[in-house]
Length: 110
Length: 121
Image 1 (tube, each protein chain N blue to C red):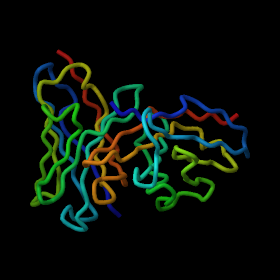
Image 2 (image 1 turned 120 degrees about the vertical axis):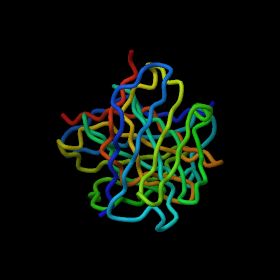
Image 3 (image 1 turned 120 degrees about the horizontal axis):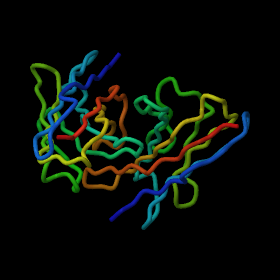
């Protein structure tokens, strides 16, 4: 069974930079995995940040960027702000019409 | 601006059918050939992709739910529906609808606000 892996938690200082990753328990992530990233605060619906590896959704500030780092997808937050404190989920396309979400990363800004 | 709004029963008894609808406004389901998706999130847990449908009626489902799920579309009402059969407490979750992006719902944007469904007797 394919599992999408994310770090459970990360802490970043205000103004700092943090890179979250999204991998596979078996195999490598590539552009053909169409990595996407979502931000979710408690009680709210997810907000789309990034799709197709590095395309920002409408209205997303440019301090959020996506990339492929080695065999994983990555989301980098540059110049972290207090309201970036959220859960972040990635999703990968597995082929055959199927997508899988990662377990999420809780980011704390302090 | 495209908006999605989920609605349906908030409480379902075990072994019964969970039924939800997602009303789409600000755009037509038939426009652009997008896949329209359902995603759920159990309380305190992560997101799980359920499946999606095109306006043609073609569907794709999560293999782990495929035997219990049906997604349909009503073009006259510009809405999609989700039926999940034989529910258990493990199906308790916030259910979201979202428009898929790419040919095979490779990403999801925008999302509805979600609706909580509790499975309990």
